[in-house]
Length: 224
Image (cartoon, rainbow, N blue to C red; front, side, top):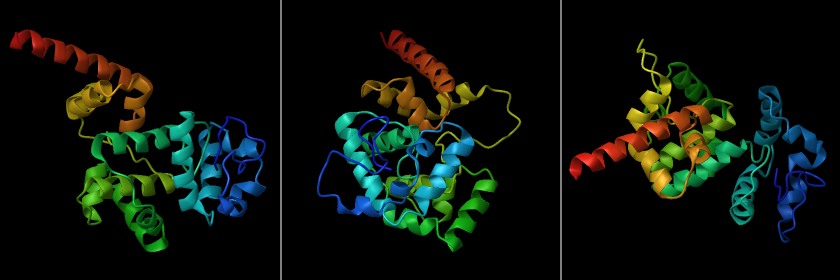
């Protein structure tokens, strides 16, 4: 679903012209409220509409362009939540990586879907899942992440194996992703950006940021 405002007149309406594919969007015949239901079930229902849409790929591209222009992200669009779409922005800023939407579409096909679900059930990290299906580059990783989201699976970068460790999640996130968190902050990001990029809660991101900031200050003091 493409939007320029939080509550468009109809889901597929846009102020831009020349996007003739919008008339074929599945959301054009669905009530707009379905795409602004923040519940887990509501998001799942909206995503099911999106992933069956014949113009899903065009929608993802159009949504990214419009949100870059407006800086507003609301509801479900192109089968993704607002934080997931923000995560794609940071994937590009930090790694120069955009998903291969054609490949992501193939990964949600029947054969690949079963493999992805199986790998996800093993609680592998995003990196491990990507390597398991033959990917090694940042683009491969973000493509895998997009496919997992479209399959309604957790595509978090911070997914860690359950190993009986008692360390709080925010601490593990800070330890594993400190340099990335620092880069997001240096680029002008905040706790919402870190939360979206890593795929963790805002409170977890906030605690991890506090720890990373303290660590950087301590390192500067030692260096001085």
